[in-house]
Image (cartoon, rainbow, N blue to C red; front, top):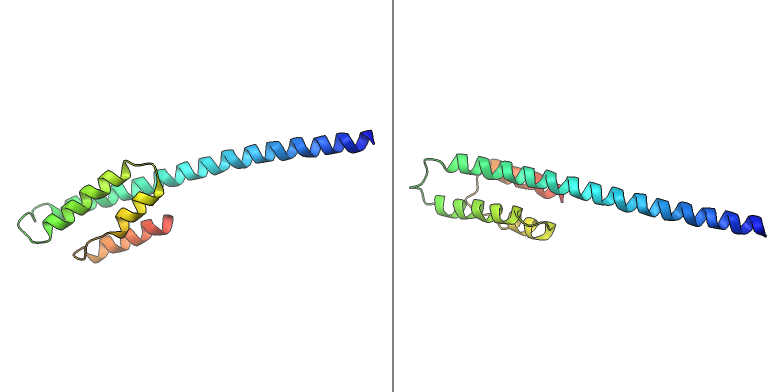
Length: 109
């Protein structure tokens, strides 16, 4: 009977350490994913501002600029939900190359 209890205690201790390791890895992976998503969104914002340089007089400028500013505000948050909602609310005048970038970023969620 003593062997049974010692084996049971060993299994519980191993399970506890396994749970701790799982929790640590999960947090590390989520943190890396957030960093990657924020970097991709920052690159998208930079490319969008480059695209808008010199186009202040066009009709699409105001809408695309407000979209870029909204994306900047969304990247300041730590949660995935608001970031994904900001990406989903892209304007209709957004060029195709930016839509492709947004779909790549959405795939990371």
